[in-house]
Image (cartoon, rainbow, N blue to C red):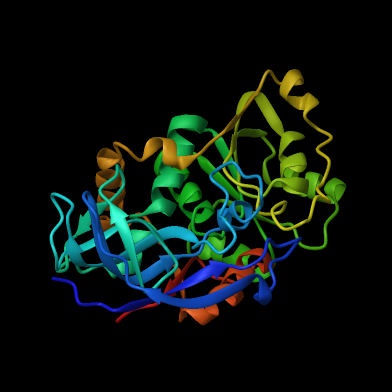
Length: 342
C-alpha cells in the first residue's frame, strides 16, 4: 500500500507570450494522488524536456492545451509505487506519458512499457534513442519520408535528439545525410560524431545565403527534407527539392516562441514545380504498435550503428532554465530533467 503523503509538480501559472519566463511556472506541493482503476502511481526519475511543450502552453494547440494551474505533460521514466493497472506491478520500472513532477499517475496506454532494471543502457536511453526521439526519427523518416538508397536526406536541427538520429538512420539506409545546425561546434559534431556527409551552419545567414549553402551541400538536390525548425530553414530546403521530393514536417521550434512574428514561407511554389509532397507528422499517431521499431532501434544500438547524447539537468526548479536551452540551442542532445533518485 502506498503511504506517500505529498508530491511536487511544475504548474503552468500564466501563458507565455514569446519566450517563456520563470514567472510563467511555479513548483507546488500537493496531496499525493491515489491510483484509480487502470492507473499506477510512479516515482519519476527522469522527465523529457520537449519543444512541443511550448506549443501546449498556448490557449490553442495542436494537442490539448495545458490548463492554467495544470501540470506539464512529458514522457517520464520511473518506478511504480502502487498499481491498479494490469500488467504493471509495484517495483517495476516503466516509461510512458506522465508529468513534470516527483510522482505522477500513469495508465497502460499504447506507449507505456516496462524497462528491464538490468539493462546495461542508462535509463535516459529510454527517453532518447529507445524512446520518443528514436521513434520520432524512425517513424517520421521511414514511414513518411520513405527514403530510397542513394537519396539525399536533409534534416534541420540536425544536432538535436531527433535530427541526429534521422541522419544516422538515413545513412544506415544507404542515403547521403546532410544536416543543418547552429554553429561550428555542432556542425563538427554532425560530421565527426554522427557521421553526416555534410553540414550547413545556419547561424548569421539570411534566407538567400542559407539557400546557397544548402544547394552547395546538396549539389544533386534534396530527395527528403526532415524539418524540425520551420522558418528560414524550411524556405531554403524547399528551394533545393528534387522532382517528387518528400518534406516531413516534424516540428517548428523556430516558430514556437515568436509571439506570432513568424517567417513567411516564400518557396511553397516549389512543391508544385517539383511535384513534391509536404506532410505533417505526429509521432503519437504511431505509438500504439511500436514494438517492431523499438526492436530495430535496439538492434542498431547494440551493433554500434546509432550514437546519441543526453543533456541532463537536475531538479524541478531547473525546468524553466532547461526549457529555454531548447530555444537557445545550448543543449547537447536529448534534454532531460532528473527529479528522482540516481
